[in-house]
Amino acid sequence: MSSTKGVGLNAAIQLLFVASLAATPVTVTTLDGESVKGDLSTLNSQKVTVQTEAEEKTFAVEDLMLLDLQSPSPLVQNPPRAILLSDGSQISFEAVVLAEKEFQLTTVSFGEQTVAMTKAQNIRWGAIDEKVSESWVDLQSRGARDDLLIFRKGDILDYVAGSVIKVSNEGVTVNIRGRDLTAPLERVFAVVFAKREVNDAPGLGLVRTTSGDSLKASELSLEENILSMKLLSGLSLKSELPKIREIDFGGGRIQYLADLPFDESASKAPDEDFPVVWFTAKNFPAGSGGRRQLLIDRESYPRGLWLHSGAVVRFRLNREFSELRAMAGFDQTHIGKMPRFQPKVNLVIEGDGEKLFSQEYSWDAPAEQLNIDLSNVRELVIRVESLGVAKGILEHFALGDAQVIK
Image (cartoon, rainbow, N blue to C red; front, side, top):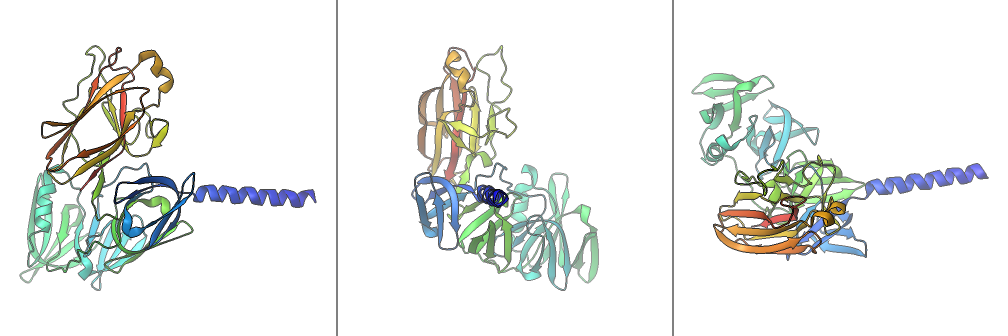
């Protein structure tokens, strides 16, 4: 009798353990700016259901902007190697071979996959950085009549035009005016294919993974922690839910501020005798090594910016965004030490030199939701100025869930 009870108890404990593993914390953002946090219950092409502390809430997919699965991994915009499909989906890969007019892909997230040659816009083996990013965009948009085999020479992208006839782990072969040229793979930056029909429909949502995949889905379904996706290009993929970073239902209209490049070179320590080690950190308090989330007004935020007083951060927005949304307040990771030093700062937000927002915050003040108009702003500047008596000590400010909206 006692052994039977023991078995039953063990089974119950195991079920609870599995249930706790299956619970996926998410943040749902609607088109009108509402943000709801909870555990994901349902996800498919029609609806998303989230269990909050108070109730279960269901959202129609057409009313959603973003489903954030709160992964601590930074968003990978340009993975080292990627194939761009006809629908605009980007899939990161480890190896690719062309056989019988089909690409055999060894992908990072989805194992072995097959893609018809006609469904590929380009394949890239070279890393993108600021020095070649503009040239890379230009080469993709030329609409060339021939395939382009692209090489990187220092900070310049050069190419030869022809017809790609072979892709292997050793190199890429292009036929140029009846003559075959084979380039070793280590010398190839990319291949851009000619005359590709592009499906630029928005689809149901843009699924981003932790390894840098960006997938235009036409259908979604979740079952036992496995997300099944059908892409606009026709490719069907499956992924474990922890590998999914977010699903953008707003057609790419939203980006996290921490995922955008910025310049902090104008930052200066509040006290010249005590230099600041870190002026900024993305998605976690500086010095925590990613082991802690931002803590604002006793609530945790897995995404956002951590800013020390003296920080001056510049973003080039190029008039692409209309609004900045964020929860602003002190990061209270070290709240137990704050009463001794009474930290206080002034948060200033500027657009093209014009002051858009200015507010003083003390360490014990409640957090504040920011909604800043960024219409026609080319350069966004965020300043955190020291106002505390103990200049700079524990003056750690945070912008939780900081997003810019197109």
